[in-house]
Image (cartoon, rainbow, N blue to C red; front, side, top):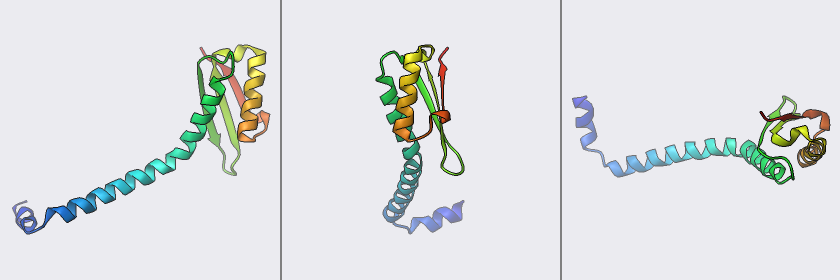
Length: 109
């Protein structure tokens, strides 16, 4: 440890600190961009569906298969109302351009 400290005494710490900050910032930025696409898509759809009258509390999950196929699970208070279910089904199918058979709507407990 003493050798390391002696070796580091001659360093100017500013360039080292700058390089470390840039590396850490780059890693954090890259990681956030990877998660942003899915989060944004889910967040937008969740916001859209929450605007439908009768939906109530809402949670959703978007899955993506190997060949880009998507599936959506919507869990909400209003799922027991057939009119609300139909509106959710149409909205999700249209927003994500997926078949209605890929959408599951469940009642929240």
